[in-house]
Image 1 (cartoon, one colour):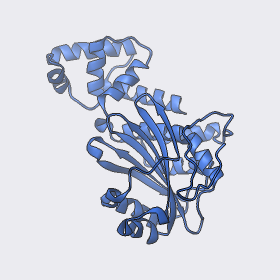
Image 2 (cartoon, one colour; image 1 turned 90 degrees about the vertical axis):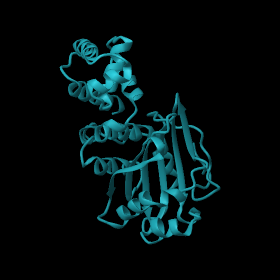
Image 3 (cartoon, one colour; image 1 turned 120 degrees about the vertical axis):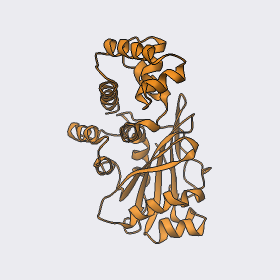
Image 4 (cartoon, helix red, strand yellow; image 1 turned 180 degrees about the vertical axis):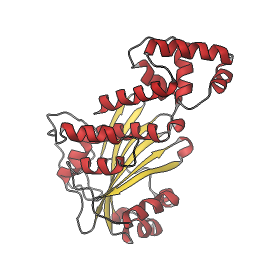
Length: 283
């Protein structure tokens, strides 16, 4: 159980995250989980995710982001609990320049390491933003009081991030709310990663598709995995052949063999099948 002051630098640093049903009651109904899964890859994902987050804490505004290779941040979507353009403007201000002033070495309040994946939560109040321009553009002018950042980072530098904001009128996150969000963060970040793969599939690393194929339960040869992973990342058969040092015809042969084993007729069908499987697991 987390104790201590969460509102500033005296916050307790919790070194583990859990989604155990014994730690947080299941507040998402089957219908809510179904709505989340169906929203992945659609314009309504941010709104549906925000509604789900509010089962655990009052979140006035959320921003969904991905960090690609080279630390290129991309804003996928934003959603507000009450109609407001200010919070969306804050997210855009952050993306345009202010992220450069966001102190990255703040100690996380919670973290969990899983293989090459690091799930972390960072909490910051308005007063803790030291850069005046950053604080003015993204907090003071918009009326934001504090921010909780959930992030799912990988060894190759890619990451998915969920920013949860509270307005001054709402007040700061309570310790019980932060605790609940910490425990369900892995679930929401996994859902966001699926959404990001649907939204910008070409930008995600080939190795992630290879891992999904390996978990699909059908034994593909190493070469079949190589070909399919490259095709799923958005490369053409010709590009795949050149990268792997094989002819286009050979790449076609490997892809057809893999499709037959997996029971699909195209890379599009394979992509959709893997996404559906991932959504079922994360849900």
